[in-house]
Length: 110
Image 1 (tube, one colour):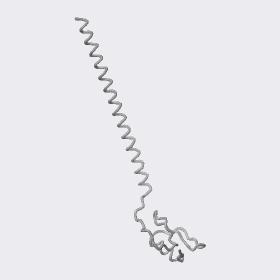
Image 2: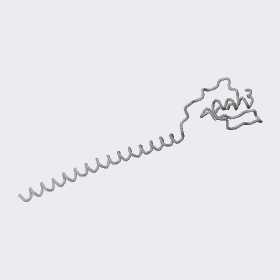
Image 3: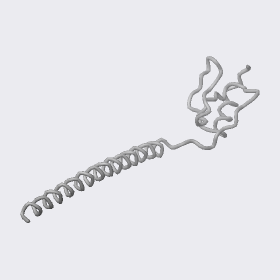
């Protein structure tokens, strides 16, 4: 693939992104075009479309943190729910045992 001259490369970069590195030895320059990984110094016969959407790292980190917090909240709710179910079952068993003891005591006194 032939290389374009650096002035055309820089012109291309400035219209489509930001030229951040020129390499006169290979007559190429790299162009910051988001996540495409393209080098503007190389003529590409089938160029990939440049994505206009590039996720902001802070937003990605926020979404990840929010997901982790939601996961912890859901886990905590399930744990509390299972503990409450176990406690209510144990409480009902204790109440029925206490009723049995009261009934037995009443029957013995009569």
